Amino acid sequence: MTLADAPTPDLIAAARAHLAAVDPALAMIEAATPTFDWRLRPGGFSGLVKMVVEQQVSVAAAAAIWARFEAGLGEVHPHTVLALDEDGLKAFGLSRPKARYAREIAQAHLSGACDFDALRHLSDEAAVAALTAIKGVGRWTAETYLMFCEGRLDVFPGGDVALQEAMRWADRAERRPTEKEAYRRAQAWAPYRGVAAHLLWRCYGGVKRGEIPAF
Image (tube, rainbow, N blue to C red; front, side, top):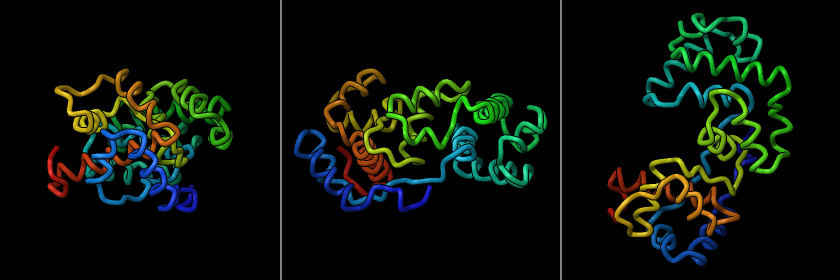
């Protein structure tokens, strides 16, 4: 994945304008939120494994674990992952479940159960299904992989708590939407649900950092 695959600033701006026009609640968020770049990152086998490794730990801890993982394997490849058992992978700082999931992803890739090249040509729904068929890859991971690693514009990770909180601000609601409610609410933002997610994340981060007034 290269930066050329990321949605362009002009496309993001057009999508933001569309979202503001179709949803007055989101328009309030859009008006207060500065421009942002698409959060693109490398994909493929190593990209998905890295996303799993990074989950539920701090940014600093994730970076340290991944550095040890890369250095220890020499190359993050299905064969190098499967050359070690779970205890061998744990030695790099992975938890036992994450070590097991890394091996599951490697096996899925080598068996053809998850073909990362073919994944790009699947619909969003089919791509999510292919990824979540791998043990240890949940819906949130699959959706964020498709957004950040493939630049998909209409994927929305409704289970993300930061998104749910920003949606609560937009709708001036007393509580955050549930995951099911968030998915349903986001339907109004098609075909730019991924842009809406980036917008809400940027707003959430801006409020938490004091860059944007609280809603």
